[in-house]
Amino acid sequence: MNVVLSRDSQVRAMENTVTNTERYFGQFCSLLASYTRKTARLRDKADQLVKQLIDFANTETPELRATIRDFAEDLAKVQDYRQAEVERLEAKVISSLKLYGAQIKQTRADIKKCKRVQNNEIKQLEKLEKLRQKSPSDRQMISQVSVMCHIVSPAGRLLAVRQAETSAQRASVDTNRSTHYLAETVDAFQEQKLKDLQRIFSDFVIIEMVFHAKAVEVYSSAFQTLENYNLETDLQDFRAKMRGIYGHSEARPLTDTNPSPSVPWPLTSQSAQSTMAREGKEAGDEEDSETDSVEEIPLEDLRGQQQGHRG
Image (cartoon, rainbow, N blue to C red; front, side, top):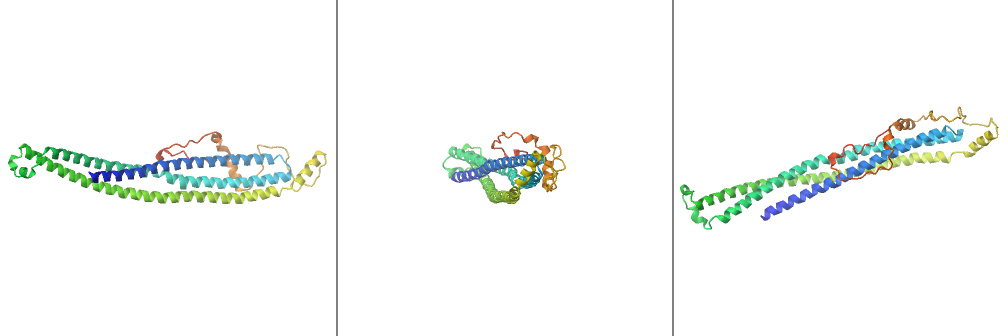
C-alpha cells in the first residue's frame, strides 16, 4: 500500500502542476486581451484627436495651419505603429496563450485515465486483503487438498485468494505503466510550458519596445514641429486683418479661410489617410467607463474577448 500511496502523491503533484498552469495562463490571457483592447481604444481616441486637429487647422491662419497639419500627420503615424502593436500582440502573445486550452484539456484527460487505473488497483488490493483475512492460516495444509475437492470451503477460498492476487498484480502493472506514461507526459508539458512562457513574454517586451522606440522617434519630430512654429507671423497676420489691413505677406496663402468641417485639410502622408479610414468604426468603443473585469475564464472560452478593432 505504501507504493500505491507514493504513486497517488505523484499523480496529485502532476495534477497540481496542470491546475496552476490552467489558472495562471488563463489569467495572463484574459489580462493581455484586455490590455490589447484598451490599446486599440487608445488608438481610436488618438485618431479622433487627429481629425479634430485637422478640422481646427482649417479655421486658422497659414503658419498655424501648416504646423497643426504636420503635427497631426506625426500623431497619425504613431497610431499606425500602435495598430501594428495591437496586431502583433494578438498574433504572438494572446494566440499562443490560448493554445494552452487544448493542451491542458488533453493532459487532464490523461490524468483522469491514470487515476481510474489507480483506483482499480486499490480495489483489487482491498479485495485481496479481505479474502486473505477470511482464508485459513495454514495454507500448506490447504494446498494438499485434491483439485477434485475444490468445493471444500477452505480450498475454494484459497483459490479465490490466488485469483485475487493475480488480478492485483495485473492492476499493479497497469498502474505502473500508466503512471510512468503520465509522468513523461507532464514532464514534457512542464518543459514546453517554461519555454513558451519565456518566448511569449519576450515577444511581448519586444513588441512594446519596438512600438515605443518608433513612437519616441515620431514624437520627437512632432515636438520639433511645434518648437519651430513662429507665432509672431500669425499674430501679425491676425492683427493686420483686425485692423482691416490686407496684403500682408503670406508665405503659405489661404485659399479658403472659412471653416469647412466636412472638408478636412488634405493630408498627403499614408499615415493621415489611414487615420481617416479608421474613424468610421469606433462607435462601439465609446464606453470609457467600461471596466474590463478579469475573471478566471477557461482558455478555450477566451476567443473573441481580445478583439480590439481597427477602424
